[in-house]
Length: 88
Image 1 (cartoon, rainbow, N blue to C red):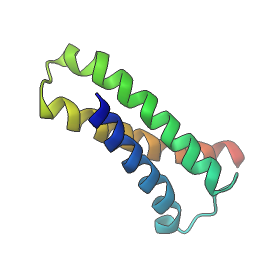
Image 2: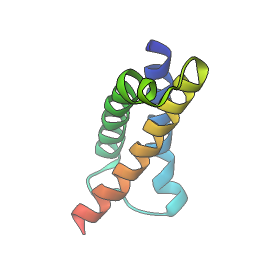
Image 3: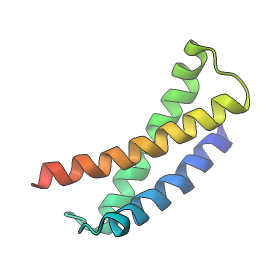
Image 4: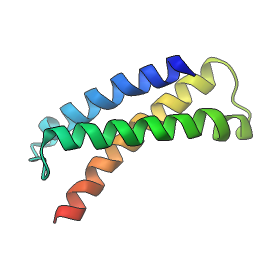
């Protein structure tokens, strides 16, 4: 569980920091809010996915770890899009 949260933390911070540069978009509430919201949402989703959703669909071992972390990092990127839609 700790490894999943660590991977998610690092991945979420990197994604929420680099994604605005890749799309040439200005963070509407600032870069710190983007990183904070993306990381928090990613960590919460990684916990839920690792503890509850992955066992339900039969994922075990490293596939459970990688699947939960990747899903959470993707969800952090979706939250950046949601923040930009709220501001607009």
